[in-house]
Length: 304
Ligand code: DHB
Ligand code: FE
Image (cartoon, rainbow, N blue to C red):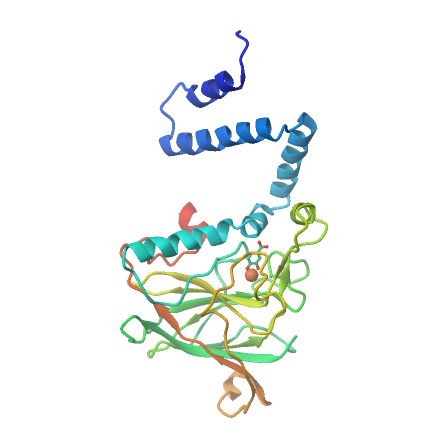
């Protein structure tokens, strides 16, 4: 076989085929391989460096942590920025801002109507109630909207990913009532950090970066005919609120807290002493097609 230089090899890699294949996959692979060839050449990557990276990717995947590096490298926020820009170009305005889903959503959480206690047992932080309404752009309530909520425990861990937690711990789905209202009780979670001593932390240590996210609570809000909203709210006062490892905090999503709220009217949530309350309405925009109104979160939607 012939001797080849970089350009000839790249040309062969990108043009070899015995069948049409998938044109989109071909185009993306061609671009990525071309850019990586360029990186290896221009940064003079050694064989040892290359195989160290391949080994790290293997360990990252084996640990189920591929989803943990995308947010920290900005990809999740990039997708949101591009979606926002596409909306702007299309003249689609208003609604609660989107914010990254993150890698830690789990479908199938226990469902309740109107109100639910998200945590169980003794509170592991300040007792917290979040309540509000799901509305459309005209201000009309969205009866029966489904609100998935999930957040980290007092150690910053998410159930199904963090050892020692119960299935669906700190994960619930609330069906809004006939006026589109919901309320939930939990405790104010602390921030989250990437798992220590892991392939994920190896990367961020090598980059000289921290892996902390400010305290936040995730939501996925779904209703027929309306665009599925994936968002998260931030709890004010967190050290990392403007220094989020995942670059995902946004104006309009930092909630206001009222401390020392009297318990009257909150007995059905088991509250008997002053607590912290936040009012937050979710405003949904019209869906232009079935896919935008899909009740499924990211992974379920793309594998459906
Ligand atoms: C990551 C973790 C989160 O809790 C989150 O909301 C987003 C990203 C992460 O580890 O990448
Ligand atoms: Fe999170």
